[in-house]
Amino acid sequence: MISPNHRQMAESRLSLPVLLWLIAIVGIMGAENNQLGEGLFLHPVVHRVRLQIAPSDLESLRRDPRNYVSATVQVGTNRYEQVGIHLKGSTGSFRSIDDKPALTLNFPQFKPEQTIHGLSKIHLNNSVEDPSYLNERVGSELFRAALLPAPRVAWAAVELNDRGLGLYVLKEGFTEEFLRLYFHDPTGNLYDTGPGFDVQARLQRDLGIGPDNQSDLQRLATAAQEPNLANRWLRLNETLDLDRFISFMAMEMMTGHRDGYCLARNNFRLYHDPGSDRFVFLPHGMDQLFGRPDLPWRPHMAGLVAHAVLETPEGRRQYRARFGMLLTNVFRVHQLTNRVTELTALIRPALPRSARREFDEAVASVKEQIALRHASLIAQISAPEPVPLRFKNGAAQLTDWRADGVQTWENASDTLTNGEPLLKLRAGEKPVTAWTTATLLESGRYRFEGSARVTGVVSLSYGKNHGASLRVMGKPSSRPRDFTGDSDWQRLEVEFQIDGAVEEVTLVCELRARRGEASFDLKSLRLVRLE
Image (tube, rainbow, N blue to C red; front, side, top):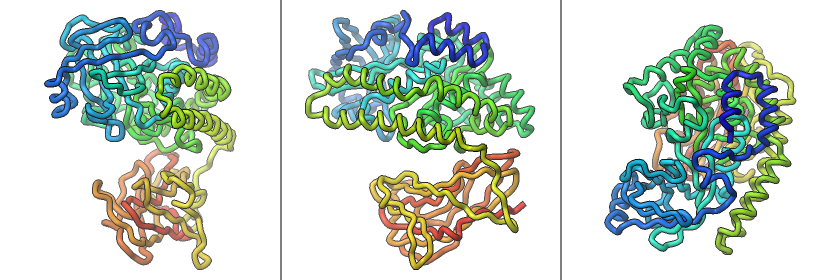
């Protein structure tokens, strides 16, 4: 946790070496200070949480799980009455009230002024997508070690009406108390994704005073879409805390947060700090980190603001410098894996014996992924700066393809068929599999083209895109309609535009299907420069 003094020093715009010196003082994981919520997060302990919900309110949660009902909550020896509670979770993590539900506890919802250790809201995450129960905690500590605001995390053994639900990740909410720990003025607008997914859409305002006209978001979106790169950098600096945002981007990429703002326009909060009149991005939903060790450290950014920053020469320069310094000073493998060992010793006894083998395997995987991620990043950042793709007679062959979104090498292989090299994809446990390659392109219009065939491809029951296709990540694409079933070789293509002076793009050979196979002719995959 960043103490008030550290926070004030960080906000005084000290140089990064000085900030990293502060990180060294605080420690790689940062000691918790005496702040609001210390009873939950200061001491390493698995809390015991007992919930009592009346039968009629349980039925209400079955019908409408997102609406608050009243509950009695006991945490340790402390008892709280009339606590607002509802179910939470996304497509992958949501569970019903009769299963292992993820829960939000709002203490003043029905009893004003009631708090738990000074906090108004906490979350109990079921961690069904993270059997190690560690990612949220490790991610939170890493972001705070980089002097970025992030919710604190602990654990709880939870009972509901005397039914044991098991171990949970206990996380503080994005509330006014949370904002007060990091900002002098906590009355600014706090935005959630809501119906929108980025700053140019209408986001949901969770906190803030004054009219909800989203004019502050409009300023940020306009700055990010400024076509003149020099002017864009100046305008972004007026409405965005660029220093913190560059660190935010670096930490999302370093931890492999593939479901965060930069790569997915998901799992983030956005706070407009009245003191600086600038936005600060806040990380969220970090239950799946380090999953792809070779994730590029400077990939195509889906988030509008991240993409806009890295299109500018100054943004790329600062991002590279910041990434290298944080990689050296924060992402320290030995300290991280030792920390995982410490946390494992704390939470393992809270698990039933039948669950400990799976837990031990998940913890070992986390340690391995951290080490592999660090090794990959060291190799990537040490490599020479990429140069824009060179074209001969208006075309360029594409190489360096990597399997993405596949369970095993057998599901996607680079093979020879009748002497011809093919990229193969097979639908299986995951409905979307792909081969990807990244390349640097100068401003202009391009066509990504190649040939593919399909065998026994059956459409998904959802979504608008099915079968085999070529696409450019983050760019509008036109694809063959339902290229499924059995089909001999067909030519696929998609055109796209590069507006910035230089931009890195990710090109994708993809299969979206319940079952079946697709083959892409490797020699046919190329880029054509149209203008």
